[in-house]
Image 1 (cartoon, rainbow over the protein chains, first blue to last red):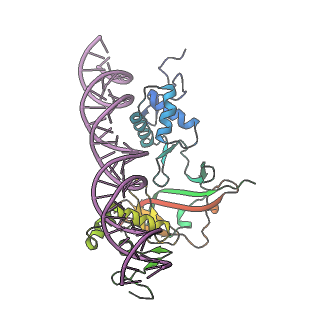
Image 2: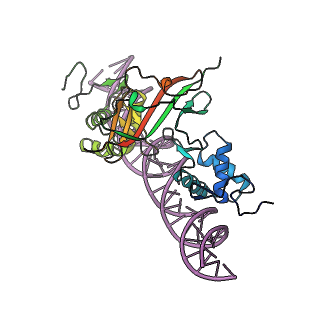
Image 3: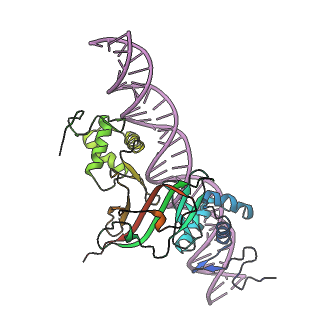
Length: 142
Length: 142
DNA sequence: ACAGGAATTGGAATCATTCTTGATTTTGGA
DNA sequence: TCCAAAATCAAGAATGATTCCAATTCCTGT
């Protein structure tokens, strides 16, 4: 059916290359898992899921792949406190709301016109390259 | 600046008890270091400084003390990415600006009227208990 | 098909932090 | 003041996430 010459893989529908990164079988699989599993999984959670399709994959490879994907801007690494890093494929600028009753992590978008200087007393002349916003709380059930 | 009220220790000027926490010699010393050293030191950095005055103090004790102080709301624990935790005695609600050229971490206050719902698309009904804002960037020298 | 570079693997190593277990110190009551 | 209980400390072992390393294996270009 599908040869391996064009830009799509047989099983994942993910291109052979993204953002200049060669998408090997394991990188495809890991990226697919992140796209499917929007729950901000940890490396270990990704590892467990990846073994369904790639029984020989190693945890080191999962870390390698996640790192490669992060470095090429394909996914983002998210840290809460000192817990294990989590990974998400949402590239829009966004923060995270951690619902403590359910454990669910929601992405929270920045509203249009978002500008940190509007609500923070930044050092004079500061040039912001990156912003990270994390909220903790809960969403009461009605 | 050493205003002694009722219960004060001779050497640090720090009360015997804060927020219901018994201020032992090592807790006083560690708290004093944080008040003095406003550079958001790590546990290990605090440990090194603490040994000047308490040569027998152990790293475990530094961790114990920092944890006690954090749990009683006397200081705050601050995490950047997955680096070692840092500690700061600034209890005002504030975020952090990490100047990447100098490595300096600046506290950034929230402006009056600060309200996360104004600039974030929170999940409907979300009750925010805590917010953490970290910026990375630099402050160009003129 | 072949060489050279990239990727993968499994296990060892690292590092911050936590835990465990006695030893010390402090506190409150007799 | 003196004692027993409770709290705190210290030292090192243990943990857990992540990184490093050395040895294959896999790709890519020729």
